[in-house]
Length: 191
Image (cartoon, rainbow, N blue to C red; front, side, top):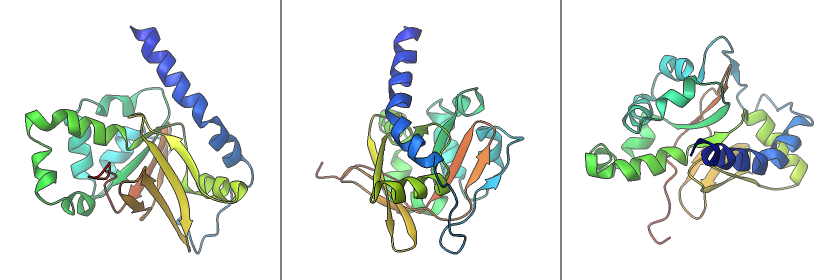
């Protein structure tokens, strides 16, 4: 069973290679339009996320879905981290997600906020510039997220669902990156 999971994770990581390769060329970002990623490489993703203010709802969701442990493991991930205000925008739906019968939905939402690899906003922006437009990746939840520039703002959207702006200060840890978002990425109700 472990080999199937490892093969699936490898396939997801391989799908990300074009983005990672594009990201490695010219990774400098314009400091006026994009916050620089803070280096916290002495901490794991779990430790860095624990030290961040305004993401307690996401931390709780990671714990409830039993995904928090992967953030302290050896694999590298990028966490698209909706802030607490982003979860509040969901209204009653946010509170409902903490109910036991909603756990599969919460798990799906959290997995769609996790990407394989170590991707900073600077490298994502460089990939967008190299592609001459948006770039897409597959999440651990097997959803597709698309990164794009809207003026000076880096955005991410989930299929035809919610679109979020990257806000605040991204944090690079020793096993990945945390990118703060202003919106929870959820699928469209029509989708």
